[in-house]
Amino acid sequence: MNPYKRKNVIYTKTEQRLLEKMANIDIIDCHEHLPPETERLKRQEDVFTLFSHYTRLPLFASGLSPDDKESLHNPEIPLEKRWRIFRPHLQNIRFTSYARAAFITAEEIYGFDDINDHTYKDLSIKIAEMNKPGIYAHIFNHCRIRAAITQCSSTDVEVPLIPVMDGYRLSMIRTKVQLEELEKQTGVSCKTLEDLEELCRQMLEKWEREGAVGIKLFSKTNTPPDLSLARKSFKCLIAGKELLTDSYNYEPLENYLMHKIIDYATDLNLVIAMHSGVWGDFRNLAPQHMNTIAPQHPDARFDLYHLGIPDIRAAIMVGAMQPNVWTNLCWVHIVSQEMTCAGINELLDLIPVNKILAFGGDYMRPVEKIVGHLQIARENIARVLGARIDHGKMGMEDASKIIKKWFWENPTKLYNKIVLEKKTENPETGSRSL
Image (tube, rainbow, N blue to C red; front, side, top):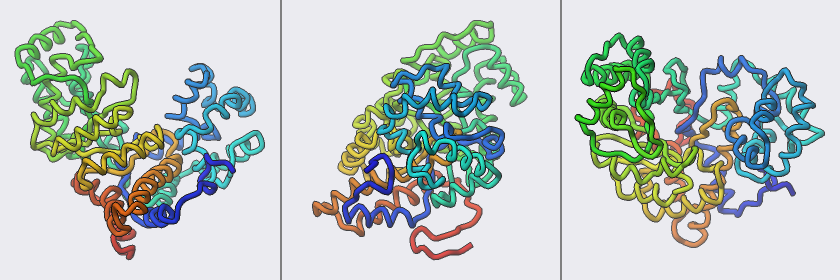
C-alpha cells in the first residue's frame, strides 16, 4: 500500500459517507494566489510543477539547495538532469502533507498512480499537453469550485477568480520612491499625511470598483493609531529617509495607515483578510495580535487566514472571543494534516459553526494541485466530523449542515460582494439551473 495516495487510504463507513457528500456540493475556494490563466500558459510545465510553490519547504528541509531548487524549474535544463537532482529528496518528502497533494493530483488529474523513475517522463508529457487554454476551468469544474478568491496583486482577473488586493501595499511604505510610485498610480500628490490618507482611500475605491471583495493585511504587534508619531514618520519619508522596519511591530506610520485602511475598506464593504502564522519567523505574525486589532474596528469583518498555524489554539481563541473575526482553514490542510485535524476538533468546541471557512488552496503556479489539497481538506473534515458522529456527539444531518456552511454558506455570507456568473448546480439540492 502507498498511503500517500488517495485510492489506497482506508476510511471508516462514516468518513466515506461524508466524503461522498463533500464531493457533491459546490464550494468557494477562500484563498489562492492564482494569476490570470494567460500567465500560467506562458510557462513550460512538467513534473516539477507538482513540486513547486510550498513543496519547496520540505525540499529545503531535506537538504535541497536554493540553487538546485531553481534548477528544477528551469526548462532549459534537460528533464533527466533535473530528475537526478530531485530524486534523492523525493523519498525524504514523500510522506509530507505538501507532497501528498502532488501525488493525489498526479493520480486524479493525470492518471499516474505514482511519481517515480518510470513515470516522471510520461507524466511530464501529460502535464505539458494539458497546459492549454481552459486548464483553469477544467480544474475548477473538477473540484466544483464556483469562485476562487485570489491574491495576485491585480484586479485584472476573470470569474471564477475573485480578487482580494494587497492592502499592505498602501501601508508598508518604506521609501520616498515607493510613495512616488503610488502617487503616479492615483494622481494624488502627498505633501501631508492627510494627502497620503486620501491616496489610500482613492486606491481602495478603485479596487472596489474593479471587483475586489477584500484587502489583505498582517496580524502583527500593533497599537492604537498615534497621529503625532505618524506625522514624524511621514516627514522622514518625504525628506528621503528610509523608514526602519521592525519585524515584530508595525512602524508608526504603517500602524496608523493600517487602522485607516481598515476603516476605509469597511466603509466600502470589503473584507479585511489577515495573514497569521507561517512565514519566516512566524512568531511575528501571531494570530493573538487580532485581539487588539479587531476590537478597534467593530464594524469590520476580518478573515483570519491559516488558523494561525502553528499557533492554532491562539487562532481558535481569537475566533471564539472576537465576534467580527472568521477563522479560515486555507493552507493549513497541507501544512500538516494531523495538526489541522486536532485544530478542527478543538475549534468545534469553541467557535460557532457559522464562523468557519473550510478551504483555500493557497497556490500560485500549480493550479492543478488544488485537486490534491481539496481532497486532503475533505479527508480532514470527514475524519473529525466522522469521529464525532461515531461517538454520538452529532448526527449525519448535523455534519451535512456544517459541511455546507463551511464550504459554501459562510464564505458567500462573509464575502457578500462575490457575484457568480451563473449557477451550475444548487449546493443545497443538487438541481441544475442557470
